[in-house]
Length: 444
Image 1 (cartoon, rainbow, N blue to C red):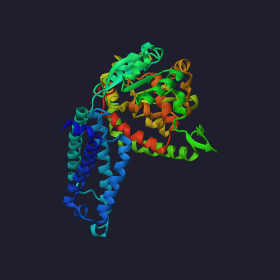
Image 2 (cartoon, rainbow, N blue to C red):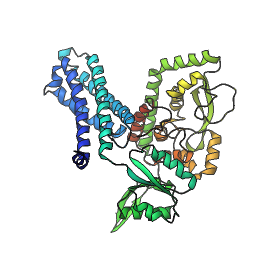
Image 3 (cartoon, helix red, strand yellow):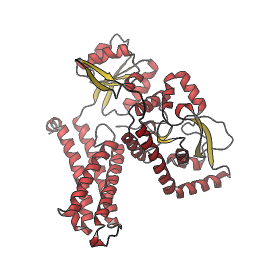
Image 4 (cartoon, rainbow, N blue to C red):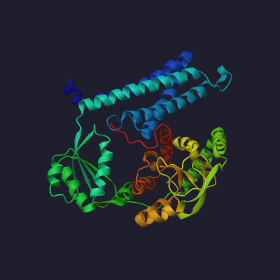
């Protein structure tokens, strides 16, 4: 039986994903169809709803990640797929309401079958959770951990890479570690299934990648600046000579206009929708110690311009001004709650409306941090090519202990692959942060 499962592993996982998707769709349409006969029959309403569900579901899968068992642990998959499914349900439900606004119903746009909608969401989350856990169990039942070699440019970097990869110990079994000049490097590579390269010099990396390619060994490379800058290059042929063209002109006029309109409209709506939360937070901060409600500080944005950022005060007043660390004893009890759910960041919506920040972009750093980081990493100034943001790629996937260099790489990935769709995806992915701990270092 196990041999059969190993042989058809990918097909079985694909079938589980299909069952999950069709099951969620059947739950939604089946429950909504109890009060709305046209949902379950071949009608204009059912066809439009099905088309919307499939199209938007594909987009949400691209945004949150699909049924990638074996790649992520179960909890992140459940959270992301549940969010994707709920948002897909809401959009499809809105289509139903629009289709029901007709002469037969008095041209009234009104909510219907809300109870069935909520029930379908609960059942879908249960289905997602069950199939995700079964999927990961099946994957590791048929998949042996890959024999893994970690290669780092410096001795002190090996431990941090081993810790990061070791989180996924059911997928990667770290058997060896090495530096680029290790005399036994070729032998260690030959007995590995996967090789991780971190901060390895380009000349050494080229030889290692070539050896892995010849022996069909998977390679995971930590990118350097040049890799990121040419990542989205366009392939162009000049006669029979292939070239990669990397344009660094920045955003077009149309992109800037659309991004600014998104900032104003979404920030304005969020301020209105979160106004009760803002009011309760302000009262809680004031009641706790009678101090000021808001914390302001000079931060850096596009082209190094400084501006005064607004946040809810989460720390004691009149204390040393330095970057916050995890479990910082300067944080107040109310502040810990505000930080946990990112509520302290909401006043920055005012900065966005004023044009000092954007919804998506590199986080605005303190001025002294910019000077310090730029001395250590001259490329740090590249972050200032775009406007600072409320959220960004580094905030979605980064952690408290992510180094400034690694966060720089994440920010550059965003800057050099910018698109309006990328911004929308990051905004939607930010929702997952509300359901995860501030620092998640657990794995398989």
